[in-house]
Image 1 (cartoon, rainbow, N blue to C red):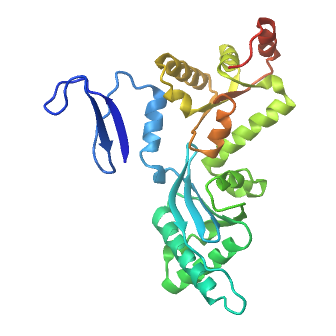
Image 2 (image 1 turned 60 degrees about the vertical axis):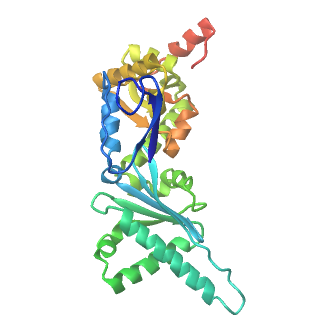
Image 3 (image 1 turned 180 degrees about the vertical axis):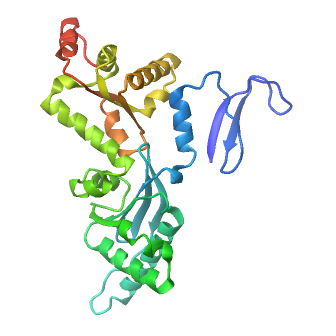
Length: 306
């Protein structure tokens, strides 16, 4: 449920004019949003966000003993669709039956979450990740269970499961998986990995050719003036600024880059890569050609990047 608070601007029988009111937006409850102007970024993001499951072509199940998060990953966000937390009895010398029973209960819960929340018609790859051998145990258990139950959804998509290492069963481990070079081949078809690669390319460019990599709105706008931006990385948090003129500024920049065939990748603060971009002011760009004069101009003016 999403709660929206604001001042009533229209006379009605229930809320006085000018009074503050709260509206609850719930799942499957219709509502209308009215704006004088819908910019291209808002419309694109709204359409994409309406149904995450229909756009998420990558899923990740990160786990540790007794804890698992089943996530759907899009270029815009990492969404936790299910969290499984099961108490596992410790192994005791000469008696591991209770421990095994607890692990089987945990695996059953994870499998049901996978079946319920992952649309295999859309998802191209499902990462099963954990420290140690828990991922291997889950995969073997799941395949045996699927064969016994004749669960076609699992059996027909066996090739989509990829086993990988991660440090924990918490959501932040997804970042490790997307950045793992050993998984690059399997993730190459997914959009989410592209966002991570774009950010890594920016960091590499800063190191190898710093005159082609800039961040901060002032530097990026200077590059845009000469249509030099090859790849624009921008956080959606900037489009939520309380300053309308600032929002228009960023929308204008995005539209300009697209107009001269530049690539725009919009990151979300809900995505692990978006958090990293936020540390770089939320906006960065890789240029088509070096522009050292951008940095030189700042030195002469005594300014630094916003």
